[in-house]
Image (cartoon, rainbow, N blue to C red; front, side, top):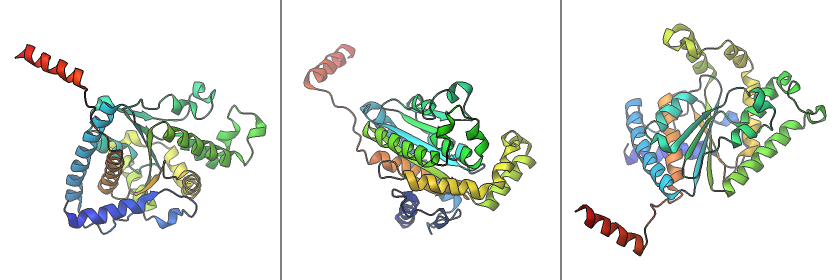
Length: 296
């Protein structure tokens, strides 16, 4: 990637970043936006490799420093490319320093706790990168669109009124603020895929035997409520976008570009921490020199 293409890419990533949701509109973010980067797929793949190399270096520094941790949250509609983005962005990073968690529908045990519990126990330790494929945001998306799920929840009926969505979003925002104050770098990605591109990808899951396992009948039911889900996402982003917990609305119609933008966002945010390898004191340095002499 040359300087000619790097600057448009930075501008595109900046346009994706949402830190104040007061006037946020999902309609303002095109799913096929390329920001006039001038990149083609081959160039994008090469740029991704460089971004992943930067991320790998930052992960090593994060691990050695052991004071910060990072949490990368991925949300999207079906077939938007979450799994592929996670695979391509983090596969070049030392697996000892990355903790990937995928959250399906809550289990009986998880439902017996508060909705943040299962995510809290899966938080990355200091020095690690946590990658959450779906997150606590599912609790203000799926049951909001499908009220029967909320009605079946083991909660007092007095808490199940229409105010619950604003309350949960308030709780999420407060929880993320708390985490940021504990040294957690929070990055939230919404992979925004267009209706036609999503249709083509769902058809591929049906038509290509190697992808059949990815398809679930429920995918069509969710697609039929696409507008409702996007409205729920818009509400969530409006309520929880903050400088300490930014959202990135990633145009996901081009998988290679979506992956590049995610990698650039994570690498850039970690570089912003100015992580340094620990230095040793005089006594420790003397011990190292004695050890070197012993090995000579």
